[in-house]
Length: 459
Ligand code: ATP
Ligand code: MG
Image: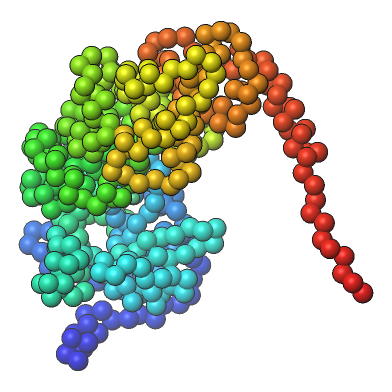
């Protein structure tokens, strides 16, 4: 009861007149709670004229959520990666919002919203067109997993925290910045602005402790270094190299999702260099590592990096998105290419050794699990490399090779490795039948489909 009363005095609800959603009020609102009354010296606050974040670059859905929270007397900040990307002049992938409203309070403000998660409960606010804005209540830096927290008897009250605590629980200084919608300032508790200016990737707090608590943060540090081109701070880098083997303690699907994001990012060449140098590669890919380790030849590592550079170009230049299978094939192909097992598969006649490669796939991508369709497609893309190279060497293209649905992607993969090896590539124009065949396939499809007839109703 007492708790309820104190909350009411702390956060007076204001009745706000309905206003146009996208009409943005000028200047700070007078009923906004005073900021930073609970911390000593306070954070570094960068006022609007001294930074480049404009509301023009923030999605209207995110602005709508920020304003509604603020208009109801709550703190409403843009948090995490979106502030970093906006300051770097990039378009953020998602706009996450932090607030002091509890998930239930947020839920009440937005009709189309849902609370998700058990312990760290977030609110998803849904918008037309499928857009989702994630709103999370400021959290403390409790680095316990769910079971540990249960044992310690920690409930939601011990999870939620102040904005400062929320900043300090984040991974990297450049990811710990807030953008305050009430006065358009940036709030920096963690030295993120200085690191952004200097181009440094640094953990918030002691990297050893932060990596031991959550080893995935090592992969996140490497990710942001490769994406931004920033250098990794010395102490952070040393801690990554020391604690790399601890990545094995993380949940396997979580680690898989992390590296899948990186190979598809368009910055995978830098990423793979960091992975190799820190020995995270060895720990994350125990199945691929022997292909590198056994092969003393430095050419293999060089080819792997060069291949990922080509893959990055494909990501940036191609109009259509490639699926996971293409990237899995791209990561493993340069390593397989130099292996005895791969060379032993070389067929004399045109043949797709898909079955054998399917078995190899399970070994090289151990311990990760993938959808069956992705495993099959990766095996098809890799096995297509043999027929393509036979046709290329003979200068004669068989219909059953170029007619395969997977041929364009398999050829892209083939050319990526050829470029990485500085060998001649195959241009599509060198296979005139392919272009001709496209027309045939289109016509065939048009005539081939039949409208399904509905059975006539008996009258
Ligand atoms: P991206 O552009 O890939 O979305 P991001 O930094 O926004 O990059 P998210 O996975 O969306 O990455 O995470 C949002 C924010 O949550 C991060 O910016 C960071 O502040 C925090 N965060 C994510 N993972 C961790 C972690 N393992 N430990 C601490 N903080 C984390
Ligand atoms: Mg994000």
